[in-house]
Image (tube, rainbow, N blue to C red; front, side):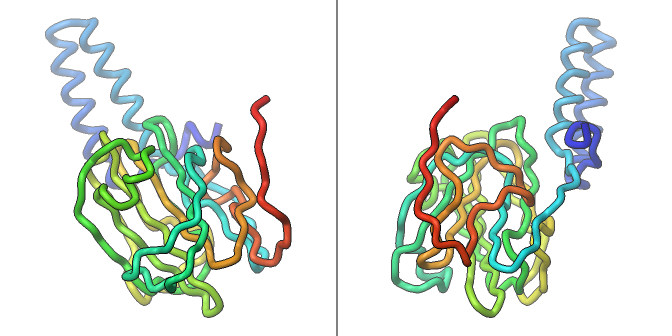
Length: 226
């Protein structure tokens, strides 16, 4: 229930008001159109919700920065401007549909070392090439031992990426730092040699799901549908 009746992001207030005013106007013209408008207004409130989360804080844990479904896990050489080195690391991609919570949270505690913005296209965010072709914004978090990059990627419907933190700022694990509207993807570049504890198709809860454990020696997990 807390994920339904939750505070909404301040960026969503203006959209809720716009939806509500339009709904009132539509209702004056047609009760049916008005009802549809109020349903969409309720969805808008739901979209911008910010439910409270309980974040595990043990040293070495990396938590999911976003709600959504793991759409891809692959080994890639990270972009040079991320400063993560030239070796391949594991990238976990989380696809957010329009019904998922759309705020993002930091995967580890540390300092925001970099914020990098890349203009781009708005193709389907579930496609692999969205990591390079789409509009995106990346934060690199450095805890003194490892660096982790989180990239917010716009999608077909998404037309705005908000990153509400700053370079040099200290952040705690699970701290809210951004928002993508409406429908999108978040890529997480794990430290070299760290194996994800999640699998493709798994649902993620931002700020709660443990994506990886830097102290774990567990092998790559496989998932089965049930």
